[in-house]
Length: 73
Image 1 (cartoon, one colour):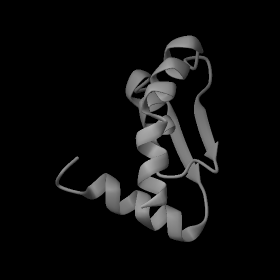
Image 2 (cartoon, helix red, strand yellow):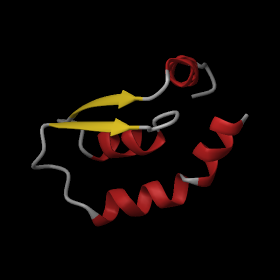
Image 3 (cartoon, helix red, strand yellow):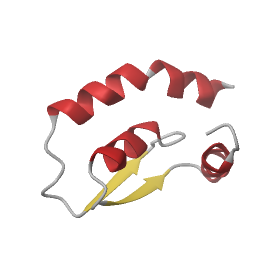
């Protein structure tokens, strides 16, 4: 629940970061402590040529995998 709340709360900030920064010159983005990966997802959606790595605690990564493969996505 905590991770989902953080993801929801950061949604507007994520969009502002993606709009404000130029990520296209970097071939690979690493999000360290990225929770469920909402910022990384928005960066990759806006820059589909990039590769991304989400790094967090193993339990958080498992939750991120479940969230990304959920039929509600």
